[in-house]
Length: 587
Image (cartoon, rainbow, N blue to C red; front, side, top):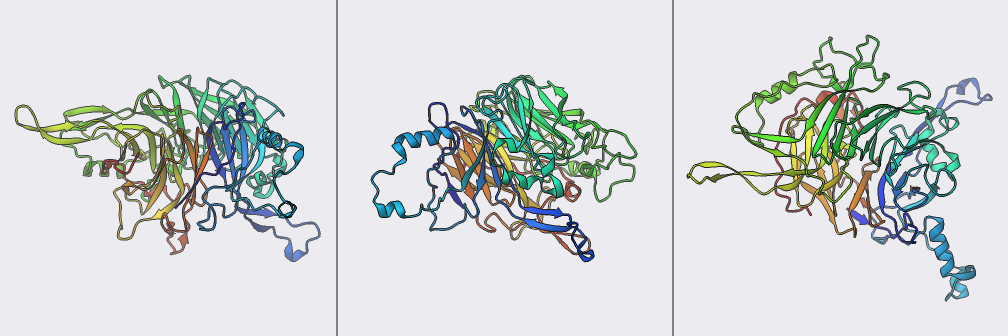
């Protein structure tokens, strides 16, 4: 593992100092495009050809205090490679006109002071910074962002055609690849060719609500949701080329406004299978909305409810229809039962989860367990005293788990009561990150205890093989998912089969951490901070593990990439697993 915090002025504030970097996302342009043959092609070459492209990943950063707000950066090839000859920090690089102006003032008339002629003739040393600046997106050519102040969140759409930015002021700006540049599946590659903001088409949704804290894209890229400080969650759809059609022209419309939360909404995450929308707020709750089903014979079948033994009577979901919120599951408290142990799961829970089939709202509905006399009830999430405006929750890429930050947890142990009898005694609460199994939101599947509150989580896009000697897991999945947990000052990397972190980085920044993302190959983790700097945590080949290869029925191997249909059949269990041990390695 290699940790690098290059001394780059990512965003420059009005006072000439680094502005806080509040959000980051990365878009990988590697892949293939299809090109049509020219008119002069011979008859033997009339078929279209597929060309493999590999262009550098594009990083987008959003800030507060910078008049440009959003910058695009190009991740250098092998920039984070594990090479002893490469220094641990990059050279100082300027990124906008304010920084350039400051450099010109320090060196009048463009001269190079204190250098010999031989030194002036030497070519400049190659930059070792992991990223280089591409373009600043300032929308109108100077000052202001159409009602958007600080950029609290920005996200690329799953298809790579859009970049949505939102923040203070309640407006949303969507940068899109022009329609003329999307031919042959080449849209996502166009970002590496952008040289000025006018190369992109943009839409402005002005003052839709109060300040926006988080944004999440639906997996079909035709809709997204935002979380606002006015206690509301808004869903927008692209009405340009028809609902559900990828590659709309940018006529976005708010189709749903929900105000179930009673306090700031600070996080939102769409289920990668398209069934659930999870939101988290300062009211100490997580609310998981399932999508209303549209009963239609011609509708597509929902892969989230498929299984190996799925009956033919399953109801289909029309993913092209308007996204309407259905039943809401509230995650707020956990009730301990007298005969319940967090380290084991009852056979009844397993049977119910395996037998539960599609409901009208679009998910596996498990019959609630038999109620027993409760011992105590505890809150699962911290209140607004957490010193962060973000509670960025996330799903794993296969949709098997929902990871939620800003949790709290009270461990229980046996002890003697005042009358000499044995009873359960609650310890002092600790901060935690709660992980819920899909369809089982009544109790945490895994609890990771921490010493400081977590503010954001992000899952690695790949699946990894189980460790040597482990043939099965408590959640019946033949692979594990790796994810990052950000506390106020520490970067922690976990997987879904153990409660201790597999990597921890502390002291890399002087101020609170704000956001993180993984590159598509799962080897580089990018972390932002309100101190104005960005850290790169890179992992060597197979350092995190061997990517999982799925065996098909014919014996062929599939890669670790996740499909909407292959993973859902493995999700058969949603019961409480081992609670995490004390976070002695966590800060």
